Length: 186
Image (cartoon, rainbow, N blue to C red; front, side, top):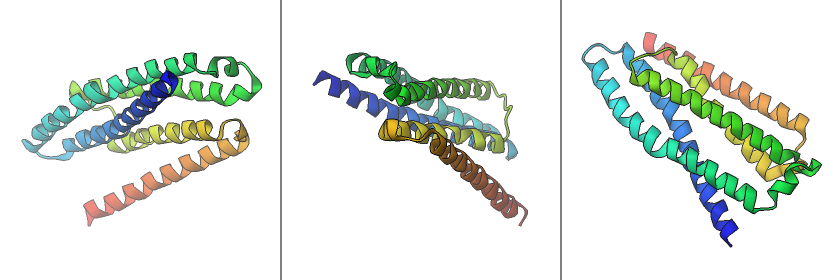
């Protein structure tokens, strides 16, 4: 029974962590786009976005990432997963854990952008941040597919699906950029 509670808490904090990973880059984008506004609106917007980003990052996203890690390790160690990890039928779990490590690297990259923006440094354009925003979507789809389909997933079809998803996301970003450019110029 304790295992199920650990797993439930783990899933809850995965959801809240992803909520932060999805919303934070949107705030980065809006914060960068505030630079296009005249003064004093620009400063006002930067202050407002900083007020929104700090609690989201330090009050939700970071704590959720830490609790996800603790609960995930607890589930891994208290369930049958440790022995499965080294077997061929556990390849999906190994791949999932590798993706989770990359997800934490992505989280850290967002932390660096957060720190830069809090210091008034805007290294990335809103278009670059829009693309970076979709990375969390790619991780979410890949990890959920691995968890649900497990060993039944075909690596080839999984890769084809991920490439197709990335293509669709990049196409959507380009279409959005064109529509936005037309609105600004028209």
